[in-house]
View 1 (tube, rainbow, N blue to C red):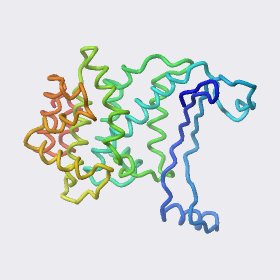
View 2 (cartoon, one colour; view 1 turned 180 degrees about the vertical axis):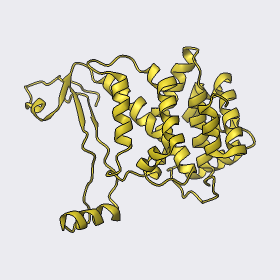
View 3 (cartoon, helix red, strand yellow; view 1 turned 60 degrees about the horizontal axis):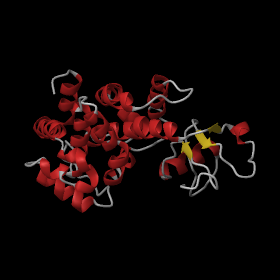
View 4 (cartoon, rainbow, N blue to C red; view 1 turned 120 degrees about the vertical axis):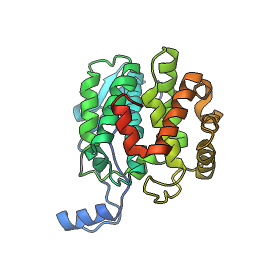
Length: 275
């Protein structure tokens, strides 16, 4: 919200997946209740609000709200580490036919990819956050993603990449390039997204449309198989990042390795420093 005085800026964080038959069944089996739309969520919750109110406010700190002068550092931390982390595990897990997020975290290659990319390239772009240790925050993210009770799905994390990547990943790439730092892991993340949008997993299973612009994304991913620059030419998504020779080279290489070897072997090469 633009008007900070009338309604202060805030950030809410709690993983709350869509209701499916799984949630209905758990509610019936565990609690003896029938409900068509039970809402499941994780135990963790974070609500950060800027303390700018015109005529007083409720004592929301008594129920866990954190009041701050500026919410932007907390928001950037969440967008890059948590949302960027979701994007990191989503596409390799999707290409490996993994259904649930916690199952993705049980796959050693996916979990190690998340840790390496976060520590090498994502977390270093996050400025200090008041009263927050970024490594502790990352460890919390790992535990949250690993929670089997949530039932969050890889397909949900893969949804709407054309809208999410420009918010959660590409600004991090831009900051790394501006600082003259490496982008091998972020280029691989982008290549994994491109490969996913081709519309098949490594096993050959069909990926059903999973983006409001799926037709465009799939057509571009098919063109990028032979011409990786086609993917980066999506100006509305990549902007200046797509014109960077450094990023374009790393992306093209990662995509070529992915097509030749599959997600599993490509992740193994990246983790071994041989990509």
